[in-house]
Image 1 (cartoon, helix red, strand yellow):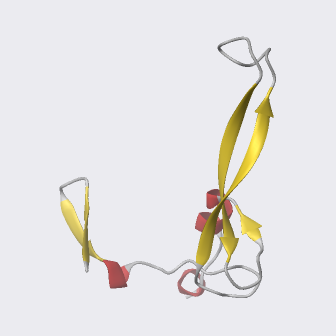
Image 2: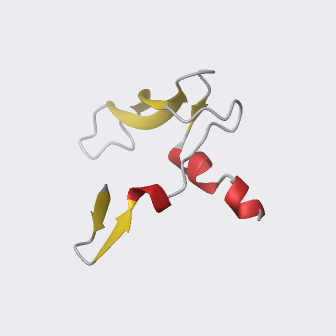
Length: 80
């Protein structure tokens, strides 16, 4: 399958690195949310509010990661 990026280039999906869980090396993740309370002093409305933080949970070992942790981890290809 080909994935268009910015309508300029097409990259075959099989040429992209699969991100694996740093703990168990599993390849499947579930999207989970962490809710954070926004105090009134930081809220544009002056009222307490909630912010949703998107996280990724390994489908095998249930470890939870931010996008930055998963993207910046060293892969087997990086070691070569």
